Length: 134
Image 1 (tube, helix red, strand yellow):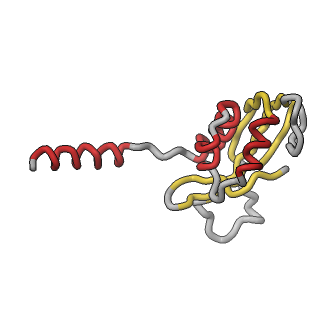
Image 2: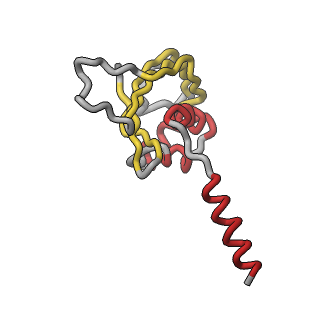
Image 3: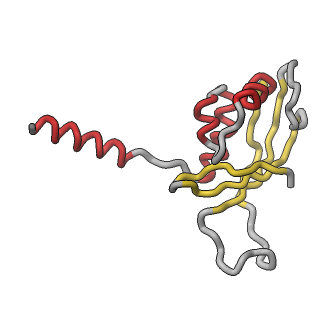
């Protein structure tokens, strides 16, 4: 009986000690997972996972992708809602991209690119809800 209680206690401690990613780590991992071709980790970054064929096209087409600059987009006071939402954030990302020879269906430019990453907390975890042009 003591062994079962000990095992359950250790298990609960391990679950409680798992760190959730910060919003910035989610965006950084978007780029890391493309370079690593980590489909499972990549899709877990999104509130709604991408279609398998879209992930496959992205992974096949990109040889390397690297962040040059990342920062939080400051909200315009005139456009802000009355109450600022703490569960949403936008990052501006400037990045370099090198394509493989087969890059059909990818909408990034070879070389420098910029995108806004829109994130929201879903069940207590930061998730990408949209990626858009400036």
